[in-house]
Length: 483
Image (cartoon, rainbow, N blue to C red):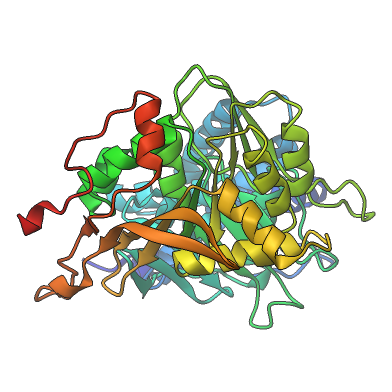
């Protein structure tokens, strides 16, 4: 049986589906998120564009059919793609119906599998994120990294590999980026070449374009699970243990101020979600983030999101502005997605003035580094405070630091649960309650065999939990493996 390329080689494009009126072609160019190849009968002033994206290993014949189908689809739909009166469901139904008619008009000798693939990929190019759509739909993919139009990498099971997809051109990649950021009211252009955004499911997006990105537009998507991870999931993954989970739940119920510390990609936001799930439903929660990512399940919750400046350089609302405003909103809990600037001082002051039970994350490689990082961030607030005063604020405000690490086997583990005890002279004193057992070594596949184990130290906050009526097992801080 001849290949698809051979079957389609002699087939001429259908003029009825390729050639539209000049006005329709202009509307299609505006509405289309993809650059389209000029039709054979296009006028001399038609804009030269490139063919649709072709995945590695895709036949030229199928790529040509997909090209013609996309051009015909845009000619049929026109500006209805941007019709504000159409709901998302109605738009998807419109594209499905028209696309089926376009494929029928093609009369291409496609197998059932090729036909379904054609419909799926053209619909992804029109309504989704083009070649990235199937990576977003793959539940095994946790992160997508685009380094210019030709290089796409993904993370699966903690390992990074190159994906067999690519973009047609830099322009095509830029259009996908613009589609993402404009959906949440943000912008990216030469005057504002960096942006943090999010997808509809909460997945985190960062984009940076030329002239800052020398090798081409760069897009990073950190996917969120459709169903938020719960504490049982983290125990199953080995991120934490059951005794540690019970302790952290007790600490949240006891309104201890907790900082989740870790490097990039260690799972800080995921753990913050799990800790937030322990907050009682009766309490009023206010979350503050650069881009909304937290997936809290409670009802009494207010979500605040910062806003960048507009094209005139005005209208910026920072995390610090939101933290200050949240104090006037009668919060029982304040959850800051991440502290990375002067808002740290306002958060510490809130923790010290009756807003117990606050949660946040910070980038640091160890609990001791987290303290140093908080000191530095407070200094960024522009207040001329002596270092001792800052350390006293931290020691008084923060009760617990949960340290996450991404180990070399690709797993994300809680490597320390550390209590902030207080001050000794000029130093903030810490003591580990749980610590990861690296001495257990690795198995044949290189996976770490160790788990976080109690250090045998009974934390000072255990008395506070007992006074609140929160009971912990008598052996909660004993290492059962040593019995």
